[in-house]
Each structure stands twice: as structure tokens, then as C-alpha cells.
Image (cartoon, rainbow, N blue to C red; front, side):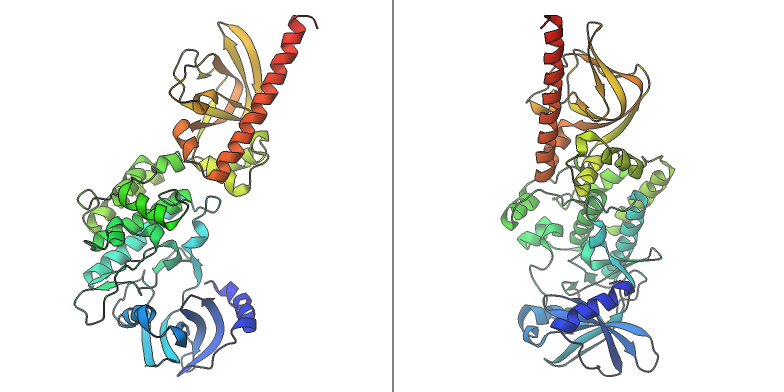
Length: 439
């Protein structure tokens, strides 16, 4: 948790959970967070004045599964020393009232903050974050540890860009006398073998990091599910929703890396971290050389577009990242009469003319959509007219497949926008028909 939030969090907890007494030689100065089984406090070493975070288990949680998870993490104190892993300093398990772990205090934000469609980090930043986490997990494996709970909430991004992997309570430890925990992990990021409880090894962490990469790139989980049972079924039995259906315009190599990390079959997944990191390094270089779309500029255009007038900010970001921004010059064709249609366009800037056999049918301005019939009917409809740019045109191209992958709320907004557009076009057509027949 960032230092700026300490005072706010402390005041909140002062009403519900007053600060605990000082522990050993640590002076408790604030509350950093509250979890299901433990609370995390900001503390200062009385002698060195250095700040630490102390995770203290609640007495009522000092037995059963929670106690085993705490014991696993405590057993790692002083053993994992890597720049991308939160250091565990010492543990105290003398009694139920004083069970705690002293750890490195990290100023930053968990990646949960950047896992929503309207809060995503730049692609090159995401790649750097995943690289750092992969290097940390590779080191942990060499030390005989599999994390088993890799997720955005357990990854802290410091203000200087360094990443810290935290919470090894679910870890699988080799050559350890500590009781191992089965069925550990967080569902949205669990591998198929984790869920089924068979064949768990380091490739489980590779899958989980692939799911984190997917979430940081798209703002969505790898599946659409309304409950845990549906999620389990999709993770175990169905392929993940393709990354490009969630967000268009990503580097192809990065998509390939994500897809391979998320393979259900261990033989098809990355075999080790060296192989994963090798591909990631190569993709990072390619990404930096690419001229990526200015997302903020596109978002600003969309925010002022009539088509999106009823969309929430987060929903506009979802549409943007599942679409392909396109620019057309004067007279350039967007749609050709007689072709199969697999996508439609939302006009953000400029206007287009609709023609049939060289006769003008309509002039459509920015704020409207064209070619939507191709996505509203089954099969691959034939285009019934041509559409060409009048001057410079900026548009979003949305494929039929991506339209079907939108969240429920965005799908509803899209349907309403289509109906509004259809109503406007019918009104214009009726007015012209009345002019033609002289009424």
C-alpha cells in the first residue's frame, strides 16, 4: 500500500480496529491493510528507525488452513533474497495473540489498480512488469519454491518502476518439513491442473503469470463466467477468449506469448522460465520499435462522439481496446459493394458517402456507424453498398467476433446505439422518399 494511503487507512481502522501495541522492538505507527485472516501494520524499528510492514494474524485464525498458510510464509523468512521479491525478515509464532511476520515495507500500488479496462498501463510497461515477475518466479523455483498464487493483488509496483512479488502463503516448497497446502490459489488465475489437483509444477506459475499478463493487457479475465462453477468449467475445458478479441492492435508476438503461457496442456505451454523470458525479451524489443496507436487521443475522440454518449468511461475503454483504429484518406473505400462483411465502423471524425451503382444513397457524419448489418446477422452477409471517405476519416473497426466478446453492459450499450442509429437512418430515408413522391 502506498505511503500516501497510510494516514487515510489508519483513520479508517481507528474506528474499527485500533492500533495494536508495539511488538518486540517495533513501534506500530499505522494500519496498511486488513485481510480475511490477518492485518498489516506499518512499523518502525526502534533502534534503526527503518520502516517495515508487519503481518499479524488474528487470534481466531491461528488454527487450520490459515495457520498452515502463515507457517509456509514464515518458513521462508530470510531465504528468498531477490530484488523483485518482498523480503521476509523474521517471524514470531510464540502464541495465538502474537503470530506475525516482519517484512520489507514497499511504497507502491498493487497491480489490482491497473487491471481494469480504463486503468491499463502502457503495453511496454506491462511487458517490463511481467518480465520482472518472471525473473522473480524463476529465482524462487531455483530456491525450491513455487508461488501458486500469482495475481495482480500480490504484485506491487513501486513509484520507480520496480516490481515486488508478495504473499508466499500458498507456496509449494520442495525439501521442506512444512505441511504442504492443497487446492491453493485464486480462481481467476489458477491453472487447470491447480483446479483439478494433478501435476502441479513450475508451469502452474507460468500459466498464472500468463493470466496476469492477459488481465493487464485487456482489463478482463481469460473467460466470461457468472459464477465459480462456470469459471472452473471454462478454465478446465474451454480455450481462453483470444486476446485480440478483447483488445486489438497489440503486438502479435506478445499475443503469441500470452496464448502459449495459457495453454491447458503442459506439453503446449512454456516448458520453463528461460523459454518464457527469451520470448518476452524479443517481444519487448519489437514493441519499442513499433509505432503504437495513441490510445489517449483515440479515447478523447470517442468521449466526444455521439455514438458513445451513453457509455461509461470504463465501457469506452473496453470498446477502444477491442477495436482497430483506422484512418482513411479522401475517396478511400471503407466498404465495397458485393464483398462479405465481417466488421463494422464507428465514425469518430469526418464523413463518408454511401453509394450503389455510382448513385449516392446517403452521407453519414462522425458519431454514427456503418456496416453494422454484417455483425447483427448470422453468417457472412454480402455488403449492399459501397462506402468511401469524404476527406480524412478516423474510425474504429469492430469485428463481429469482438462484438460478441464484449461484457454484458457494453453489449447493451451497443444495441441501444445501433437502434438509435437505425432510427435516424430510417427517418432520413422516409424524408427523402416523401420528397421524391411530392408529399
